[in-house]
Picture 1 (cartoon, helix red, strand yellow):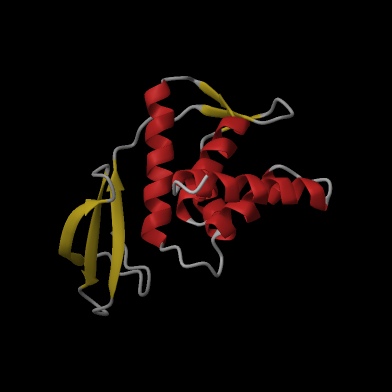
Picture 2 (cartoon, rainbow, N blue to C red):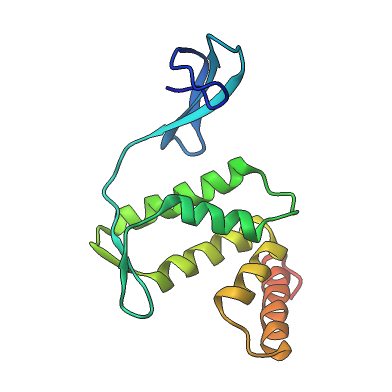
Amino acid sequence: MRCPFCQHSDDRVVDSRESGEGDSVRRRRECSKCGRRFTTYERVDAVMPLVVKKDGRREAWDRDKLIAGFHKACEKRPVSADAIEESVSRIERTVQERGVRELPSTDVGEAVMDSLKNLDEVAYVRFASVYRSFRDIAEFQRTVESLVSERKRSEGEG
């Protein structure tokens, strides 16, 4: 593994543990040249389906694109990088369990929204506003009201 700081290729593993829900291994490494520490993740390289976009184009599954979408929605919110990693891993596991070769992008978007709803409501509304392309403030308001009433139901208030 190359050190991301000095590019030296010799390091040692300082700590190793299962990450999230046990689908990956998180390793803390220390560069033998510069002494700086960095984290790597190991996971099984599974075959993921192609994502079918709304216009019919097909794209390879891109975990990094999914993580970037979560980070954008959660920007300046109290959501940890580990929580985002776990959410993305959960989505990937669900997709793998479906066992399909192609997956509509709308399914991916809905899975992200479901996950964000549980992580952070503000991030959920941010993502929904872009994903659902609200035409006006009334659509935005309906989404927020739906979220509020759903929360009240789950808390047993109504």
